Length: 449
Image (tube, rainbow, N blue to C red; front, side):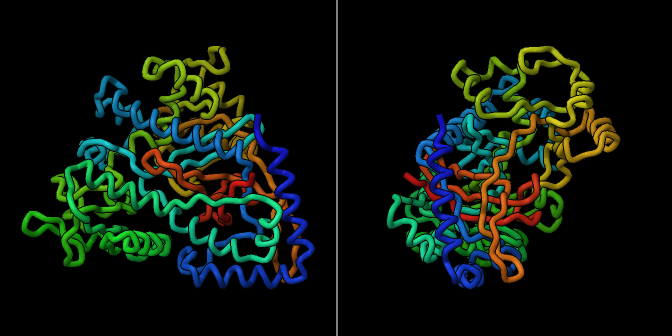
């Protein structure tokens, strides 16, 4: 049973407060200014947002949190045991590009995944997860700062007078998890942390927020570009400073694309000159094709009965696009004809894509375009996934100086932080491909009791 009715009542109450606020249009402008002042910016501009946060009933939050943690941990474990522990065989199944595979295959020791962000839809039947993002997930700092800004809005202050509302901060848990990982690798004392990503990355403001969080917890921390990394005296050094922990925010595919420029950084990873969070092995369980492994009958033996039940409940049917027979809903089907004929209920994704690029929504794609895409995908690094009904919620939208309420598609993204309870951010969009880089907006997630 979900808290859909509880959530709908809370949303309606909040929206009424916004609608009755004569200064709502001015509040939207102030919100953008407050985001800029708080560092909630994307590519230098205030993060696109709306006048209402995402509100989640307590029972829905509990289900989301528990399912996310369970799925994340079984996926990381399965990645170490798939194909009898033969990582080369798993990489071949996933179709991992060769230039990435040689780095993913290196094993600096567990944990493979310390930090992650899962993409989910909260449906009336419970949470459904469509992706895992462990390779340099963003948003931990943004979520906390957005919550602080929203808490000062007049409508929010009025709303919380009659309802118990709480926000779960993520940045403190992230800092604690990085410290524990350092100690689990034999580190002692207080580590110096380098947050490593391209200097001009669009989410640099998120990293600045986290740098401040590390500093507040007593960890010396700084941001640096992977091209500024070297090794001297057996120590990894970045921007002239010795580094104990690399909090890696640069994507592996971007590193290998610029390998000549970042070779010292990659070699420092290979030679274990520092503790890397996350290690490159996180790419195994976050690969979009990994959901195909988890939900494919050929790999049932990897999971216990309870784990198989969890996957069946929260992971949409997913397969690599191959010319083969498989099962769906208890029936055996020829996969390629099934995908061609079932276009309207399916989604086609590149297994190693980011930011919603090249994702094809079946019922938004013409039959000829779908057929061409499926034919091109057969045997390549593509997956087909059952399309999950995307929940919609009414959000107050201010455009051209006018307030209106619009039903937007909602994607909630709970954070995974080494098994500890952390928060979530939520993205909302008119488009079925919900992504900030693709024009969606982001709001903080609050739990309503």
